[in-house]
Amino acid sequence: MQPSPEPKSLVAIMKSRSVALMQSGLSPRELSLTLCLGTAVGVMPLVWGTTVLCVALAAKLKLNQAAMLALNYLCYPLQLALFLPFCRLGEFLLPLGPMVGREVLMDALHGGLGASLRLVAWATARALGVWFLTTVPLALLAYPVVKRLLYRKERRSAAPEY
Image (cartoon, rainbow, N blue to C red; front, top):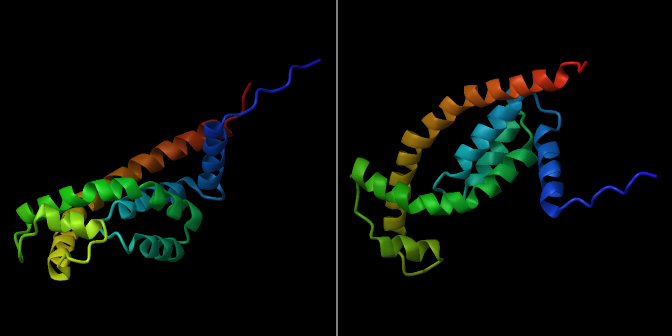
């Protein structure tokens, strides 16, 4: 008589389902593109528009939309955490327009109506500029590395066991 299998933990179940979702019908190239694009767009300092961008990119590049959106939502806390540093670095690197105080940005992120839309728009524009200067090159550098790792993993799993 065989012992009954151990019940799986919630973490193990979520991990196996997320791996299955990420790999569902995607080649290593498509999966690495999904990972790099989903993460890069997920940390973009545009709180209102990253979901729309992920859907559009996934449709245009024929990638797994569910995986792309899952990555986008997983990156949401990181997106909020990086918003202020992107704004601060943007003020330093791109000194265009009025400077925005920390209080105005925090008030705007918390839904405050008192925040000036013009100031927040300038802060967001500078943050997007810094995102473009930092995150896009990182994603472009990460793509071939991730693709190579996924091809290796695919070859290892496809190799016959003796």
